Length: 109
Image 1 (cartoon, rainbow, N blue to C red):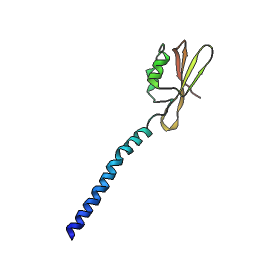
Image 2: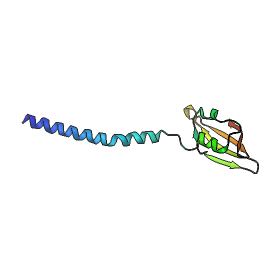
Image 3: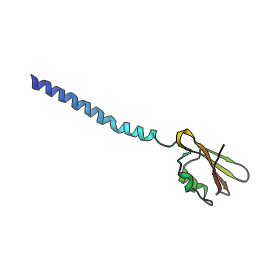
Image 4: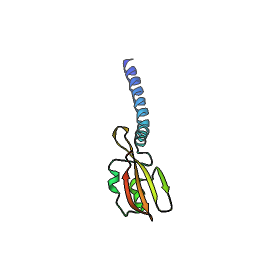
């Protein structure tokens, strides 16, 4: 009788482990996707990757799609959010003329 009880306990434990292992990859994927940087947001070291003369395509390849794009007859500005510690994010702008970077800056308020 005792052996049958142990066998049932082991079977229940095995089923519980199978359930946990079945959902573990889904939990891990959710965690990874949840920790990603939102579109238009960049990390602290990313602005150092930009240099004068880069093309718009090069900037977007390095920083991702901007949060906002504005343009006038002379220039185009790609706007990002520079993530900083303690929710002190700041706007970061890349100004392009004729499709090339002419300036970039963290906008201080």
